[in-house]
Length: 316
Image 1 (cartoon, rainbow, N blue to C red):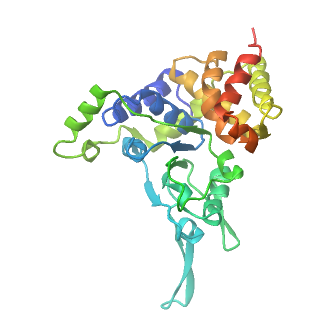
Image 2 (cartoon, one colour):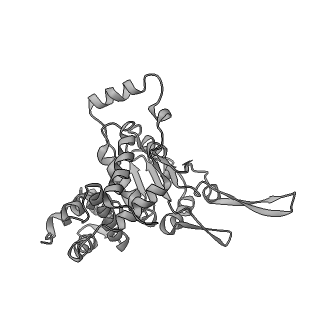
Image 3 (cartoon, helix red, strand yellow):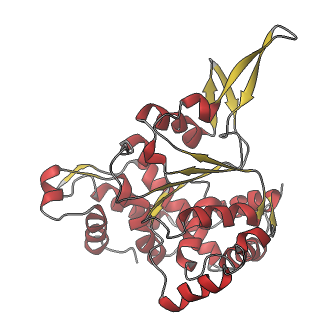
């Protein structure tokens, strides 16, 4: 497939973003981040208070693309086979037949992912990292477009299991939606007086167009100086005071690719330092593990990343 030029790819982005905006009022930045992760081939973790629209945003994206969408509600009794699938013996032909789990889809909503046990959470590691799963000793590939949107509430701790470092590292971005302005909240009430606007949302992009958008992102230029800037920024988190575990090279790759995607959205065919600085927090911070004493003294992962951005010299 020949990738479309930047103007055509940007048009695909704008169509999807405008369609989501019909549902998600006042969330243009969150929508932009979500689509950047999609275009960069990454996955997203939405962490915010209940009722802010995390699930609605995921559904709006799924309905905007003519692709397969599955939702999986994570609970303490969820098993890995509930995600990956299982072989069932058929009495008629006396053979086992594999029944695919929800992971075999284009867009997977992993709702309240931290409610499942670490064993179940780990079932997604291979899928998110390599777009494949190993079930009963056999490797099975996932579709060309495989995008995970996971949600979790930061205020609920009973019956939850913190995501392990390896799982957090699989998410290209982690960001919040936050509360909208009073005027926008009134507009949301008006839109839902009779029914939910999601019910009328129609696809505006095909699966082929989204895959083409991902190919176009790869053609956005990033200079060697900016690549080194990305690497130095990520490396700075490994030696920062109060950090027990810094960001991995996977963070460097994610930061580069998402910056390429957002440059494409802005109509540029090259990455700028400002885009890298703006994206550093959502891409890097969730991967850091702080020392207990640092957390008690008020140090945050976002603060560590922001300090690294301020300290490092920007390439000329």
